[in-house]
Image (cartoon, rainbow, N blue to C red; front, side):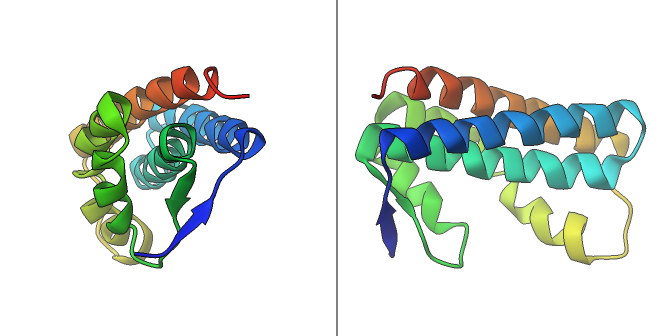
Length: 131
């Protein structure tokens, strides 16, 4: 698995991006734009994963396969395992939300946003612990 080193400043930046994507996902969900909400939620969770891996391991996954981050998260202690638990079910939705013509059900979008918000909360807490 390819990785890249992550500085404390980058951890905070990934956490900030995660929050921004999560805020946008909530807004899209409220506007009944379920595809956009789901896609934004997935990106929020991916950035949260990068923040947590950076904070706890000093590196992030850098390969093209987003599933590689799941293995790295398992090494990142309780924070990593918490994010991995919520990111794992989001990743299969990425292709559907971003490339398939099908709609996303309100329940699926709502769960995606909820999962992303949990990831972002963990990432924000982890980011506060780095210099």
